[in-house]
Image (tube, rainbow, N blue to C red; front, top):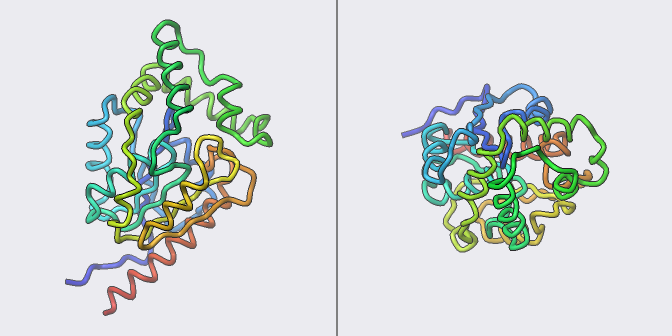
Amino acid sequence: MKKNICAATLQLDLLPGTLCDERMWSSLEQALGDGYIHNHLPLHQSRTRADMRKLIATHSAPQSHLVGFSLGAYLALEHAVTYPERIASLTLIANSAKGLLPDEIATRKRVIAMLERNSYAGITRQRLRELLHPVHLDDIAITGLIRQMALDLGKDVLIAQFAQTFDRPDLMARLHQLPFPVLIVGAPGDQLVDSGDLVAMAARLPCATLHLLEAPSGHMIPLEAPGELAHAMQDFLNLWHLDARRQYQR
């Protein structure tokens, strides 16, 4: 039976990263322009790994254009390899299928131990240096938003997201099973994600598009390079839409 392909809009199911909410996507949404419905998955409301998985399953479309950033990208990929029949396209931003680097795991464990003894005062300058490209460290529009999200979401959300997501099984060996189009976006300046992992991911996927940013960016790509990210996503989703129409016309 042929599926009805809507030419007017595409719903994007947006899954943010650690200590982020829908504000993470604000610059990207403006850059994307018309033609998209933005469905925000409230990851910060989940306190356990099981709740995170349930959130994605219940809040995303039955045939989802799933877009994930950082932690959200890993969880989106985990959902996609578990329920490939529910994915129309997958966009993974600033995340490796291999999971977290050992140094990042050690950092997060130290943060949890500190938070359990002390109050939370928000994102430190040192953490911003790890998250952002040097050219953005003094951009108050970016740093101010990151700091405000962290303060608003707070200590309990940070501990839950760190503690519940240390265990990220290596999903590289399962990528060849994914039949749908996948866009992988990374930044050579990202200190948390090895660009080599993204190249390896693209090589394993049957239908992959890899975009390594030319614009200066660290880990926080939707905030640091929203224009280039939007352009990459538009090209990718337009190609998906063209292929879908061809399938419909057969």
